Amino acid sequence: MKKTLLNLLLFSIFIITSCNSENENNVDDIPFSPNKPVVISDFGPKEGGLGTRVVISGDNFGNDKSKVKVFFNEKEALVVSMKSKAIYCMVPKQPGDSSVIKVMIEEKIKPDSTKVYKEIVYNKNKFKYHIKASVTTVAGVFNVSESKDGTALEGTFTRPVMIAVDSVGTLIVSDDQGGKIRLISVSDNKLSTIKSGVNEPWQSAFNLDYSACFVLDRRASSRPLIFRAFYRSTNWAEDTPFYDQYDDKGNYIVGNIDTYGITADDKYVYVLTHSGKRLVRVNQETQKVELIGENLNMDSWAHIAYNTVNKYIYVTSEAWGRLYRFDPNHTPEGRNTPWITQADIQHIAGIGIGAAKEGNGRSAQFGEIEGICADHEGNVYFADYSNHVIWKLDLDFNATILAGVPQQRGYKDGKPKEAQFNTPYGVAATPDGIVYVADVYNYVIRCIAIQ
Image 1 (cartoon, rainbow, N blue to C red):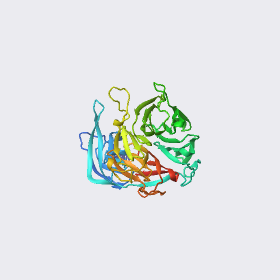
Image 2 (cartoon, one colour):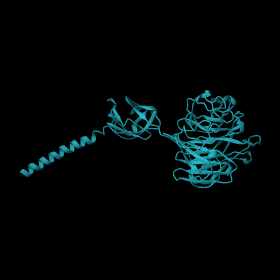
Image 3 (tube, rainbow, N blue to C red):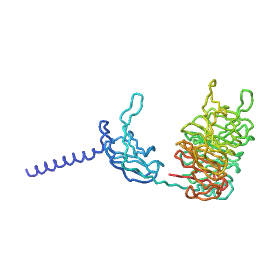
Image 4 (spheres, rainbow, N blue to C red):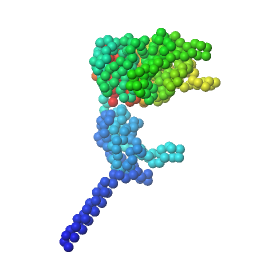
């Protein structure tokens, strides 16, 4: 009898413990309730930099992280995991010196597929963001001018002038006086040659999904070849030539003109010739060449970059120290294909060539500006080779010096505003804004990382 009572007691304790345990396990696995308020009670830590893990505590967050968004100011954070009373997330890149935290939880989806969110903003405390910034050398040997393959910091360039980068750290470098197209794999720490015997390779650009990189053949003596395409599917090892074509009158469309600017979107490659005399687009699949603009009056040397945010093409004008942009899809009334004229070109920044002066739009002053690129937030970067600095232009046309000391030629890694360049020419940006620079007369490739 005593044994039976003992067993019943133990069983009862087990049931009670199990129930309590189950309740404890499930208390954080409660779905979001649209009829209850979302509460943020605190978060921690209160400061950090890019990638800092932050726990936001509160109530009614739900248990489905696919329905939750977290913002530090206007920058969306990565939600790693969550429970009903806690969200575990990572701080996004550069949300600002101090950030208000906002949580948005999907309430429903309308018939038109629009998502409706309930949101809560936490104003009691702000997250303090610590910026980490540096300029480093990632390839080449300072002051050594020769083309040699090897590890990234042992291989060398004859003259690295233009550069493009994909989303995973593959860089394509035009070594123009070496007559080579070079590849840098940051992850493999390797510098190699993917094409030799090229007639002055120049500006290059990846398409939007980074499956192909297009490298311009600058000189008219290369015609009818316009540019070469290298593909990820062949590990960048083989090139496909894209050739000029005839117009309806039997004349070459690009013609016997030097080309300086090249960029790409998801369908076309755009090429700008000397002084903006001709603007063409080339279909990446069919290789069809179309003239879409003439006599754009862009000065002799002009380079271009496609901005994925506003879908404009930005143009640097070297000797004028000015920045322009235009819509490559502008189609005038009466035409069924794009056509760009001088009237469609917008002068957005730069008062004229001179000493470096930060400012907004045309109040800023640049020197001789060359290579240009854009990140996925719409920021545009370009190299000022006479002032030896790298510029950043945001979507509001605010022009600031990203790195370099104006008018000081040199070679120095370190903090961006203390680093020195020697005639920087080409620039390339990853989607999240890490900028690579072809530092021509230091004969190296530099990396500007501000996080």
